[in-house]
Each structure stands twice: as C-alpha cells, then as structure tokens.
Length: 245
Image (cartoon, rainbow, N blue to C red):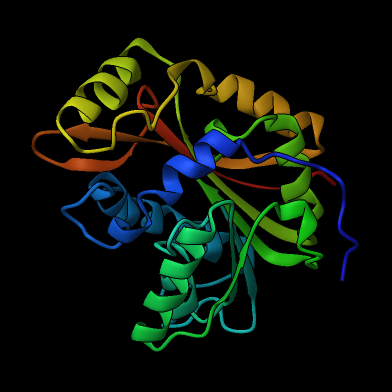
C-alpha cells in the first residue's frame, strides 16, 4: 500500500452540496438526471479506452476481470457499479459521507462487492490501481494540479486514467449552467463556470504531472442524437491518459 499523503483537495462547500443530494443520486428523474444521461456515453468511451489500453477485442463480457479500479469523487456509485459489472475490483472514494452511505446501500441491493471510502483521497492509504477514473470532479476541487497529482499517485505504472469535465466556453455557460439549472436537470449551485477547465488547460496540467493523453472526445448534444461522443468539445469532454514513458 502507498502511504497517505498530506495533499488536500476537498472543497467543503462543494462536498456539502453534493452530500445533500445523496438520496436522489439513483433517481434518473431526480436531481442527478443529467448524470444518468451522461453515464451511457461515458461508458461507451471507457469501454473503448479499456480495450485499447489492455488489448481487449471489444467482445469480452468481463473486460476488467482481474483489474483494479479506483473512482475518485464517486458520488453514490453511478460509475463504480458498471466497472464492477465489467469484472473490476472497484474502490470508490467521495468527499461526502452521505454519498458513500447511499453508494454502499445501492451496491448491496445490486449484489455488488465494492469498497467505498469517505474523505480526502490522500488520507485513505490506498495502493495503486490499473484504472483511475474521476468523472465531473476536477472542476469542484480546491486545486486541480494537486488533485491530478493524487490521481497519478494511485495509478500503476501501466495504468489507465479516465477523466471527464465541462469545458469553459460560452456554450457551456448557457446550456450547462444557466439552462440546465433553471430546467432542473442539475441542482442550482452545482456548477461554477469560472472553475471549468478548457482542454488546453487540462492537457497542460496533465503534461506537468508526467501524464500523456491518449484520446480526447467531446460529449455533445443534439435534438436527434441526445448526448453523444463527438469531435465537438464545446460543452463537455472525456479523455483517457497514461503515464509518460
């Protein structure tokens, strides 16, 4: 196991906000409705990234069998559970104890064995993982560079990093912040547009940490296709990465 570090990334106000939504995480029509719509799109990207990184053929029912996965900022387990169903030994960490309680209860109902921890990732004393993921989290932490350092610290030398986050563009301000919150697709106060990272900014942070991007795609919306992977990164984007060298 790695030793716990002193790095701190949790924004207490953000943690309290999301902890207050714990009871509705698994309701596809509740306050996390947008996450339920995002999850299938994310999973399509993740499956392709997993197969590309670990040499899968896209046909295996359990592509992560024998692999370990860490989801940082896991909420109530919306990504942890699919990773477990793909065969991974999954650990989820979240800043809000209420979310971890909801995640643990839902995993038990689903018959899934997932390890959940509440608190600062640096304080957990966890080891390294084949996959480290963090979806829609980096825009909520105190220091993105420190946060990326913690993600890196938990990656195996040949590990895979998976990140998604909103882009800081006029379109994301209109559709992800103003419209989505007014229409109830996400709770009011969820997003601080000024904390969104552009692809160039996130790429620079990863490069500084010795992490290289393998693939980056946008998550776009259209009336005909709904949310889907796209070359258009104006709203949101997802990436896979590995340690340099």
